[in-house]
Amino acid sequence: MERTLRGVAALAEAVVEVGAAPLGLDVPVTGLDVFDRAEPGAEPGALVVAVGVDPRSERAEALVRAAGRDRAAAVVFREEGAGAPNEALRAAAAEAGTAVLLRRPWADWAQLIGTLRAGLAVAEEAEVANVPLGDLDALAEALAALVGGAVTIESPDSRVLAYSSDNRDVDDIRRSTILARRVPAERRAAMREDGFLALLRRTPGALHRRADGTAPERAAVAVRAGEEVLGSLWVAPTGRPLPPTVAEALRAAARIAAPHLLHDRARRGGERALVREAARALMAGRGSADLPAARTGLPPAEPCAVLALAVAAGPGPDPVAGGRLARSALAACARRGHPAVAVAADDGARVLLGGLDPDPRLAADRLSRLAGALARDLSEEFGRPVRIGVGEVRAALDRAAESARTAAQALRALRLGRSPRLPPAAGIGEVADTVALLGFLDALREHPPPGPDGSVARLAAHAAKPGEEVLLDTLRAYLEHAGDGARAAAALGVPASTFRYRRQKAERLSGIDLDDPDARLLAQLQLRLLALDAAERD
Image (cartoon, rainbow, N blue to C red; front, side, top):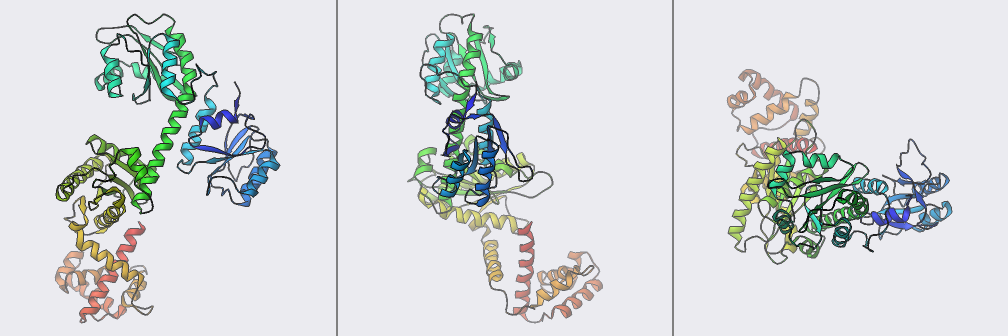
């Protein structure tokens, strides 16, 4: 059947909203185009996804008019402000006869494009027993009547999304699956070993397995949007064997369930993104604790803390990309029974933990042990060292920003400190000297010594010439070894005579008075600042 703008907007309403529809919503949609400035133009009936185009710009208006000439169905922009398109863009849409859709603020482009592609691949089916779109509980009840058995709707990772309420004479596996809201681990393992799960994913129709030993009778079908598996439907007998028509009925049920599962997936993804953004704002000191508390179970009036995580740089793909570090940290916290919210950050990830022990000392001790365990687990997972700054425990969730600030300070000290004894996870008190030094260096960066030609600046300019870069290392080694030339030469691995010559040259070129303790201290701080700037650029 033909997909319409109305149907696509309904399926994807968790990630997109209608901003303007001058020709209504019953226009046909034939496909998806991602706008490319180098290759403009769209197919008739296409949804044009305007990645990187500011909806307030003249380019956006021109794109809408061009889409109208190409007879595209709609152009999708990111949402700005209150969500409604500005008057100029609305006027362009009316002139072009092309709809404008807006990406909701909590969705990213990848999520939106994936949802729209899946929505276009889902065949429109007639409503079943007037089940509202996305009401999976009502859908399970309706499908149970259709297929003649007890229905369970599952996600691709075997979590129970909904189930029918007819539990007469059901077997123990279905009962335990429903109680745990997940297929038992041993049952999943058995189905992986005998190949049933893999066969289910690649089979376009339904599978019907008779009872065999400890495995009860089941019929199952994968629910798809094109090639993408959205989930699965499972049917268990209720007191008598499943009817011989169950496989045929399940194929029809899968087509009916596809838009519901797609809608539910987009809705759950939108809710998760909304919670993450609320937690991000809370940790930045901009938001309320109400939404994270309501959606995650983090108790608002109990102690909380923030962990700041980063993966050390190394060869190969960045493991932090796409929020993988945040997802892995969240899963690791869940395995240990700690409710949390994890979000990606510019330098790695942040984890907000709530419901900590009311005794501050016990809470800090348990938090430190958790951070150490996470650092070990995640370092093993990513194959690179993971550093974790442990924020100070605060009395309630609305003070999470204070903990986040100290967590970020501790993480920065762990990443930039030079002591070989730095642990993989630490609170601000354990790295206080490095935190203080970094504070001095930040102040020095903001308020450099007067005059453009400071001693270290002059030496750094000269050391930029080929063959002269050793002069900065020479001065640094001399200062760090308290003027002991023999130890400094040994640290650099050069003869004492070579080191003495380089030190004298560095002293002459820089103009530093190495007999002045103030000059030595300032030079050492400036050298440390040069190294800090280089490390933070990397």
